[in-house]
Image 1 (spheres, helix red, strand yellow):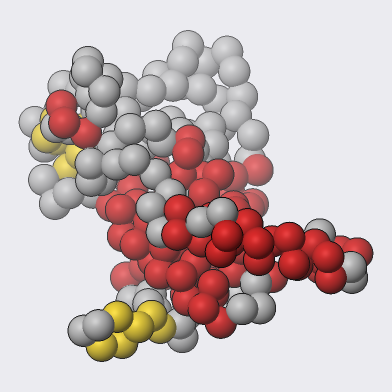
Image 2 (cartoon, rainbow, N blue to C red):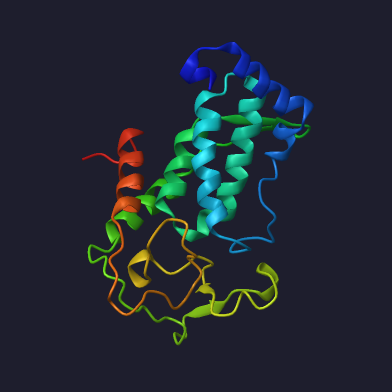
Length: 214
């Protein structure tokens, strides 16, 4: 609000929430999780959308460091989902960022594979957005997601490739980046058309921040 209105009272209130009411500390553990693939997946998209604003407008160096470390650690949890939007958001926010600890300084910058896998996902993004049925649960090259990753009974039908990553985006149906990438069988009966917005969001994020070169 301070960025939009120029009124410093909003910045003061934000600082009060961050320090007095522990919002900054809470940001370090934004989601209950038991490792990759765990629990509700649409929370992840909401988190990365908010990281973009948190780090984009925050001026306090200490808060920026805390938010950047939180984003870095969250992305490590999401890296195996091959999500172009999450990858580009993390890369844009954490490039050149560091975080201190009792053991030294940690570089939070993305590695080369983060960008390469995001670009590969966009290259694979289906041009046919009709919700055709995609069935992968019968494949012998997938492993089941651990029951510990979800609430009781919720891991059924979820899986990933032997290397730990989810199936590529062109081998499953996607409606939004918040879809459950671990779901082996997805899509519908061909009577619905998905929006192209997720592709455009990730593509222009990558283009704007220089990760995609035309």
